[in-house]
Length: 180
Image (cartoon, rainbow, N blue to C red; front, side, top):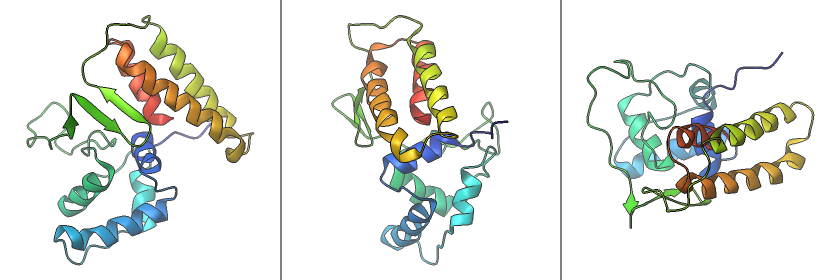
């Protein structure tokens, strides 16, 4: 029986930003807060574990500010569901860092906002997601250190395919890429 995947968006952003453990992210949040003018903020590994669970709690405002600063994504992109729901009134979203019509994907490559002229078939998202699902299942029987190079190559492939993929395949591909 497989375990629920949890908040894979936050975990993917954490690892992509170079925080290989939950403790490393907790320490970075605590250490960065004073640099942003937030005093007395302390985040523990238990809180990170709760955020990476299948139903993460909505972070407090000061923590949201530091979390989005460190990981470069807004909280909804990090897999959190706002308490007011996705359909209701919501505050203005944080601005994304857009440079020359590209959005930086932490150290992998840049993903153009506009799709390029070469388009992938509609099935590319589903096919990519199937490989991502297989990697997740392999983590139960293969040592992570042995599987990591294949997952990293798969993530790089996803970054290359994303700008060449139109919706709805692009959404499926992006979700699988976040999990990778």
